[in-house]
Length: 253
Figure 1 (tube, rainbow, N blue to C red):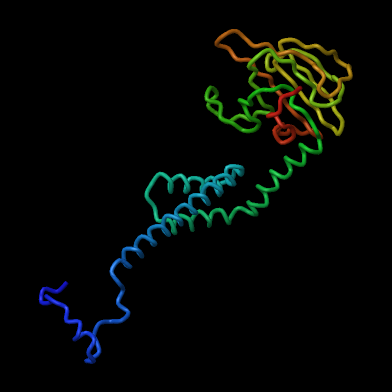
Figure 2: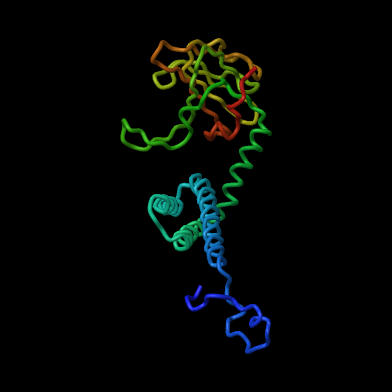
C-alpha cells in the first residue's frame, strides 16, 4: 500500500466524483502466480505425452532393422540422455519415421499374423521353460561377428519330458556335434519341427506320433551347468520364428 494513504474515508468513496483512473481490467493479485502454475503443469503434461510417444516409437522401430529406423533410434537415445528442445527433436524423429513405408501397418501386421498363426496352427510348446536364446540375427562375442540362429534355446530347470508339438511322423533320429541327440518330425501343412540336445530319445524313425506325445527326455545337469532344449520350426521349406506360432508361456499338462 502507498505510504501517503493512512486512512480510508468511506464517505468520500461513496460520494460522486471523477471516474477512477485505475484500469478496471487490471489482473488481481495472485492471478499471475496461478497462470504460471497452470503453464508449468501444461508443460509437464506435454512432456509426459512426448515420453509416451517416444516409447511407442521405440517399440515400433525396434522391430524393423533399416538405416532409417537405426538413425531414428539413435536420435531417441540422444534425446533421452541429453538436454534437448522437445519440438525440434520430436520433429526430427518423426521425419525419419515417415521415411519408413507404413511402419504402423507393418508392425500391427506382425502381431496380427503371429496371433492368427498361433490360433490356426494350434501347436503346443515342446517343453516348459524360459527362452534364453532367440531366433534370428545376433552378435557372437566369441567369433566377433553377427550370426543367424535358426532356432531357439529353452532353459530346462528340472528333469522334463519333451512333447511333439503336433501330430506327425518321425523322419530322422540322430546325433551330431551341433545338435547333440536330435529328432526331426514331419507334420501336416508342410511343417517340420527339429528338437536337439536330448538326454534320451524315446521314439524311432518312421514312428507316428500324436500331439503332446513324449518323444524324448531332458535331464537337469549337475550344479553350475544348464540344460537347454534346442528347437527349430520350418514351414513350407523356410525356417520361421517358433515364437510366432507357439505360445511358450503355457505349461504342457
